[in-house]
Amino acid sequence: MKPYASLSAKGQVDRIRRAMEGVVDSEWGMCGATLRLVSHDYNTTFRVDSDQGRYALRVNTASPHSSEKLRTEIAFVRHLSEARTFRVAAPISKPDGDPIATIDVPGFERPLFAVLYEWLPDPTVGSRATPEILRSLGAATRELHALGETFTFGGRPFPTLNEPYYGDEYRLPGKDLDLALFEECAERTMRVFAQLEGQRKIPLHADLHLHNVKFGPGGLSVFDFDDAMVSWPIMDAAISLWYLRRNARDRELEPFYWEGFGASPADFGLSSEAFETLVAARTLLLVNDIVGTQNATAQAEAVPFIRKSESLLRYFLDTGRYAPWEVPSPE
View 1 (cartoon, rainbow, N blue to C red):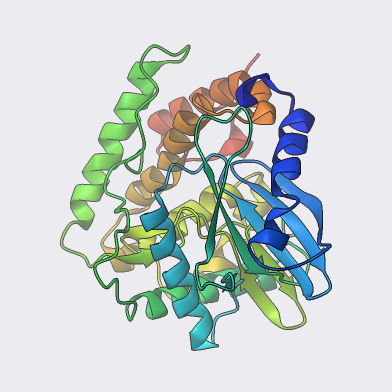
View 2 (view 1 turned 90 degrees about the vertical axis):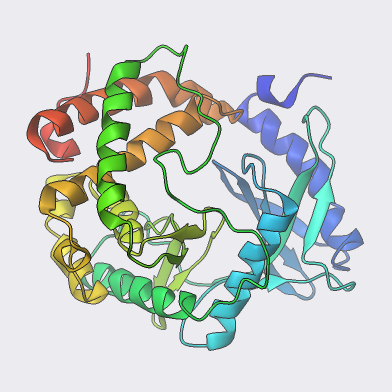
């Protein structure tokens, strides 16, 4: 049997689907459920339709987190859900009370964790950025932080964001990329982190972009807390805005985000250039992820993504701005 990493994207999805088809029945007691692919990116998510309702099944195909960290993530999401002031996809426990299923997928080098969540009915925002949605995203981030302040870990482990690669394995040395460039950007990031030391760290979403939120008549709802960790609140803003900056128009929407968030980088003691460093730093993490990915689609996109990232980081070092719309695509 071929290793999972050598399969095409379709082959990977088919293999995961076959392994998961009986899981919602055997683990959650949903007889006759059907699985429809939602996304096969960092992790893999299926829509589950059953006689008990519609759900989302997330399979942690790429996430390196332990079951203990996953349980803390689930406890955090439940804490947010129980507040009823924050719309979130809540996890669904199995009949035995355990929210996690552990599954063997043929050709995969380790067992995979799967978690079933409530289905959020509104459409994913994606590229539909508007002033109203950005204002709502900022407000939701502020509310998430307020609730995070009241979350009790109870001795459970949770990662802390205190270096540019988020504690992941450092994979860049020996790869076909400008290592000195990435190291210089990492050093700049660490200098900004040093400015933030002394400020309180709280649980964050740490991946709160418009493909992880839905928006409809009831407002904005949030899902996918796989990257959740403890850090300074301003990091959620930097991460969100990295994803927003596809073009100049989206850059013009940022004031609506800050309006909803109710704060600015200056409120965290940061200059504009220091905040731009935090935005640019997301590139370091994503390049480090893509050089080690087993996802077939990401493997195919790795070289163009690395070349584009190098151009963006060089421009950032030259100008102090992370502005993709100002940087020509590399040849």
